[in-house]
Image (cartoon, rainbow, N blue to C red; front, side):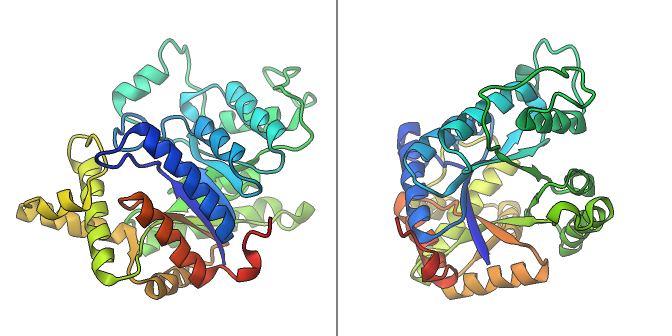
Length: 341
């Protein structure tokens, strides 16, 4: 089973954005040594408790401090941007670190005022499908197909190209990924198993219909999930509680200024309604002792027949994050896959 990481770059209570960014570099270096396949950075706007508003900049920092792990966006919310400019940014990373760049793109809207600020003075909003077409053109240096900017090339001119992925949780996104012959990334965010199965089945069905096995094209599915583990059960419960509080705050309350500490989570007094919301958050998280989490991840891998699991180690504390990815690597990543550099 292939394992990778998705980093929200959390801003822990009592820390600075600089601390958060430095830690993400260290976590990526640790992930590389442990044998994780790829390390992705999320994109979030006006979420004060994470430091991931510009994943492409964080990506370059991580690339400069690692040797071979693939580094990517998880993802770029393309409707906010010019596909041409995004292509240039990612081709620069490809020029500097060839065959290590992933680019997962999504259409997820942000807060209303963020959408307005990022799209100010735009005369028209391109359909997401058109933007994907644009990216593929600029990545492949295609000047032969009919296009409104037919002769336009995105620089620098590179001989290898970033790998493109489609992020989504709907059948519409699954169909788009399949039609374009691209890998599909879906997050386990509390939706029903039926909905997960349906989206993944839709992707595989349409992929086969559009591509079959032509040019060795095969469907590829990555399933993302939050994960909490530690070396003892008491610590697992503490970390889980803090993550539940963070999820509740960003989903139901005003945006918190930071990711809550263990102490803050323990000392908070909850209403009955808040306790119900906390319990609801558990459906998004794989948690437990390392062997239990490994079993749950393996079951997810088998149950949904995915090709890769993308873990979100979004727990409080630098040491806890480092430990959690090491514990799971020890359970699921063969020693032969570990860093030999």
